Length: 391
Image (cartoon, rainbow, N blue to C red; front, side, top):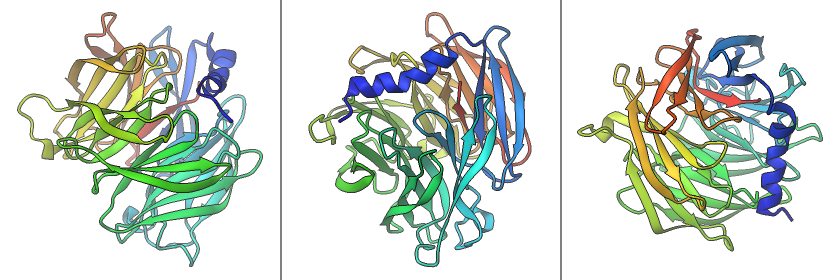
């Protein structure tokens, strides 16, 4: 049995033990498609610089990325799967890859998962991946195929965290559009978000076995859940929406793990006078202290700038206020996924896919705004979609 306190302590160990005194911090950068490389970037918190630390050739272009529980394995979806990323049934292209990470942050391919003739209609472009931090550490992925069908796919791993095989699949019809998920901090439940059905699906996880529990429809006017995160106390689920462009917070019943609409609060992620149909929210993330919540949206067309926002939370995870909503320098393309660093509440990374770069933003001392302090161009046609901090 894993308690909330025990999970929180487990997750904090690598950060405290290995990285608290470091001046330089590494992150891996996910991408939308070719070329077949993984970029590692390094942020110096003293010089306030962001540099390319490694350019690693890999078997397939990395998409959405996630770590295992101790950050010794990286999982990467193949975002550009099949023809033009449409999710064809190309059985020679892996749908998910795993990489071992050594003590210096170097990547080595350790496993690939392929579709088969029996399940090819389930697999396509991977749009979300995450690993359970409790044994047996199964990996969850959301996939979109060429027929616009969504799949929630569960995969087993070996003792080193490398991918083994598909253990379960949950197939949704073409009226659903899955694009995000998050684990409860107890690792007893995983939440899968359905943009088109405006629903949160709750699944239980028990020793690697995943079962559907219930689904919850978001109350009006919040519409189109895309990405989410749960507060470490397990009582609050925060999400951003693709259609209505909201940041919303929901209560979670700790007995059942189910989110509820009672007590929902929501905030607009649109500047005054903006049309919601021209934007779509991209990401929501907690700061290391869990006292601040970052969120972002992006323009649906190049040239229409996205925005980032900061929210203050109280000790229980309740949203106290929206501190600011400021424009980013581009639309973000398919990116603008805010990525707070692990060692401070002051800094976030922000990737861009319209032009192709990663920026570092610094929060003002009074939390009233944020400004760009470093910029790294990585314009190669497929970068940069998301950032995940390793140290």
